[in-house]
Image (cartoon, rainbow, N blue to C red):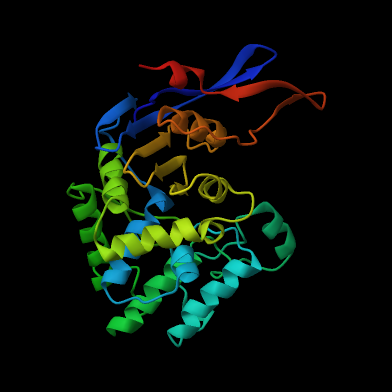
Length: 312
């Protein structure tokens, strides 16, 4: 992909030591672009930032869950006991055991949760995408679809998910990969991703409204304690936030205003700074703890988004 433009600067003792470049799009309540940096028409793999779109297709196919369960289907969860208990409840409701999961095994995503996991081997249940896969399996049970092949591109479930992507993004899917968890990965342009998230946020479709509301009302289950998507949704009323691997982020407000970015180097560093700066462009002031630049154990610098703040 193209290298993008500078979005973040890492400053040490008043000198820019490192930069992070990327592509960023901010649109207003009418869907009109108010800030474009980089190549927003280039396609990207949105990774886990689009689990809400996948969840919408599952609901449309007959999945029925409570708010916490639906939020964890949309999650890249930290792997706490609360997350895993809710995921097991989804499987149990479908008459399944965790052994039915076919996502790539891993240890918990959250640092505290991973430490608590200790020397136990990786498992599909502990992996951060297990909520999504539990939802996929429960959908297949509801429809009587094959459980062993639910990740295959030609499976009825994946065809429905692809159609949901195309409808919401208003783009034809031309590039398909495999996500880290093993599910199909549909590429979208940043502009198409922005349309998809805005269309979901602003939709009168009860399916879309149920998905977005589940995430807003249960932010812990979308990510976890101290994690940025959870913190942002806890702090800003009506905000929907979902991150994805390789430096992807989507945010939308209840009025339809949307923020999308993709970091060229795949870094998550400085995401809280970028979130605060882009939300400020939409008139929202938010206080977040940012990563510290340390020297000899003291703060000697900062990560800043000054070029973004003054862009355009």
